[in-house]
Length: 324
Image (tube, rainbow, N blue to C red; front, side, top):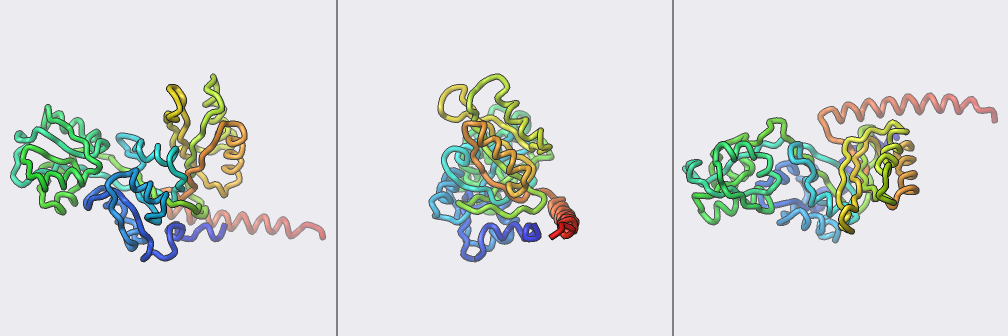
């Protein structure tokens, strides 16, 4: 456990300068904004890719060392494409999570009035977070999906279309020479997005403030099957921070469960719960154990480390009394 307090960033790459980091481009995405908050990743070679599946595929193939993708939003919930690729298409492991607040902006060519806009382009998750604003400020507009918020801004800049706007970041407006027509247009002010760093192998050491993500496939769709899964955690007082069902792609009505739980695979209580699930259910896919995000994370980790060291001294004191 003493090694558990090492920086979680060390789990990604020992040579940061040579670490290739894949992320959703083009320049100006929320993904880039979140990535740049991570000093070790920002120091690597940043590789922009056109879509989330391509970021994850490049990571799985070794074209990049790690991938950085959005996985959840406070308003719209899970980014399903990320969840599905991690659950069904790759064997990547989450290395850490990053949570940043989100401010969405309506971006246009300079001087375009709102009543001239008939099309709004953006990543679907972003558009869905601004439904109230769109209904009130630009009613009846056509929504056009793009691979990212920054791609929407880039298209407007390239096409010079005065009847179109993008939903994206203030940074994207700056990058592409556009204007922020309205800022803070998200429907809920406490908006935030959770990103994850993924790699082909390796589990970061336990820190005392960790999260584990798994996918549980049921042995049979029968009354009480979900309860049987949840009881494994309840019996061990393991708190779940997320529980979501996803179709397995095998047939209508066939679902699996995506679960985020507090704790690390190095914790015996977590290991025991996963052992029982693996034995009793059709399958369990391990997506990773990693440092949990949050402003109090470092304090919690420091407190957990101190508590562990005190407990370790206590146990060693007891074991020292064993008669030889």
